[in-house]
Structures are given as C-alpha cells and as structure tokens.
Length: 140
Image (cartoon, rainbow, N blue to C red; front, side):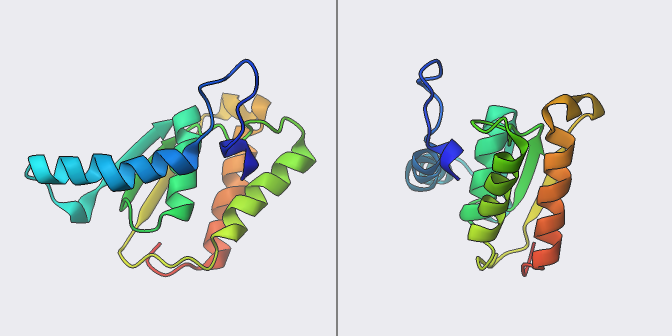
C-alpha cells in the first residue's frame, strides 16, 4: 500500500511502515524477549489513528509477529482522500497478502466510532473486515 511509504511534504516523519515492522521484528521484540520474562505466544499490538494504520499493515503482512491486534480508528484514508482511489488501496492491502497464512491463532479487533464516518472510517473498516472474512485465512 503506497500510503504507508509516502511522506507528504508537511508530514516528513510519517510513512515507513515496512521499516518499522522490520525494526519491531529484528530489534525490539528480541530485546524485550531477552530481557523480560514474557510469553512470545501471546504478543499484542495496539495502534490508534496513524499507528492503527501501521498496525493494520503489520497484521496483514507479518503473519507471525503478533497474535492479537487492537486497532482503533486506523487512518486507512491516509494519502488517498478520494473514495475510488482509497477503495483500491484497501483492496490492494487486503488482497496482496491474501495468500499469507497465519501459523498461530491470530485475532484482529477493529474499533471505530460512528462519528468517524465523515472521513469514511466506518465504511473502510466494514470493507476491510468483510474482505478478510471472505478470504477465510487459516488461524485468523
């Protein structure tokens, strides 16, 4: 999804979800597991708004990084703003990883408020969750 890579002029510190997921996988998670008594079978990622967009990306592209996701008001509208193009972006994100299998039981919980429909966020979550349900991914 291009919007996870883009850095508009006014938002120079945004984008970079692929790099962020690599840092989580290769540096942060191993550090935490080596220094704290935790169970790696029950990792949870929580994201809201822009970090919810990154959490959605990670949930759909890094199948075994986390087992639970709490994604609140994800900014799926980011860098699109026009519904037809935006719809294609959601479709691309969900279908590009459709063949990916989850080797462990994974749960994704999306939350969004009714008032957020002014930016299409309720519709976006509805479309994305329906696509994921139709794909019938194992362990999701």
